[in-house]
Length: 432
Image 1 (cartoon, one colour):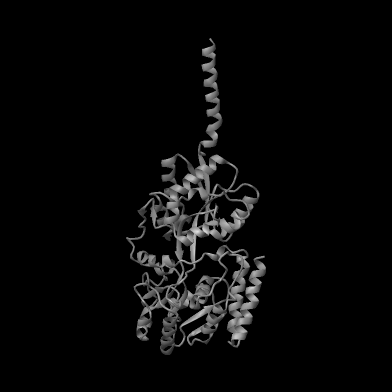
Image 2 (image 1 turned 120 degrees about the vertical axis):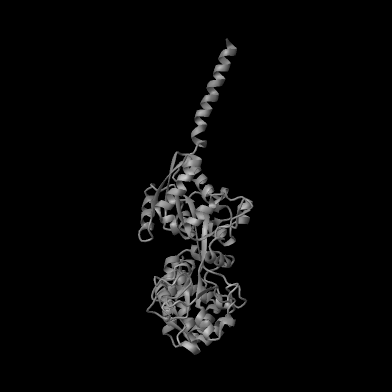
């Protein structure tokens, strides 16, 4: 009898322990994803196909809400402060890491990165997703690099084709100046340092920083450093360069329109979206409105190796205190960004994979698209993702205001240096 009771008691204990342990280890049946419009990750039909496939494989349903950049931040901030946030957010490190992560709303997902993942993920993208060596708030899926563009027909007509390497899409500072001089001699106006607002400011920052090797922030992302003498040198060189004008009447989008329509022969606000779909004139990808060929180029640097500004997008998990939902959200991230399904997830973004391989197998996403495959050559040039520096929004305002003052100055080194010092100081005040 004692033996029977002992067995029964043991069974009860086992069942009891199992009942207690199950909720902690089981995944939730449904999770929510809020996504910004990152390529076709803002398209309901595309995303439904991806999430339906995930559900079929895991049994976990995914409810998706589509955010806009106009009011998405307000919606997320309101939800997070009310402790009613989604389980997953899809956006970039400037939001997931330096904002919501830094403010305690996100789950540390450093455990999702093993040594092989770290080796396969682009170094700049990987670094941007970590707040420190042991804390990650984002798992990257896709990325792009911003660049500039040149009217190739105009370059040839000006006898300046030799100044660009069309194979590697790179050039030196010296070659850039030579090309601008040749274009200016033939056409007059070549391009503009647009500064009516922050739109497209990644282009002007990259141009100035790359010319002589200046920086925008320090490596720790704790201070703004564009008062670097190398940047002052670049700003003055651009001021003195025939064919380039500081223009406070246009932003990046308007600069692109001027380039499409032949007013400019160079554009500093460029990326794969413009290369694939340059205008509505019906002239096709990689063409201006009158059919001239557009050659995308890395920004010029003294040694020809640029540090390009880029976009990085991926997934972060909101810390809602539900272990089952967190576990399910981690499965979602691994499915989309670290598995054989990553190919489809990246294709949906219309950008480039943040990793070169998955589990040692090469991740060849765009070999069937000639323009995308060619543009992939720029990905190794993706530089420091300094957009995670504190006070980023006021720093952007200070930057274009600084460009306006430089353009309105007498062009002396003292005047330019004064403008740079004033507005870089404002940016650092905003970072305190």
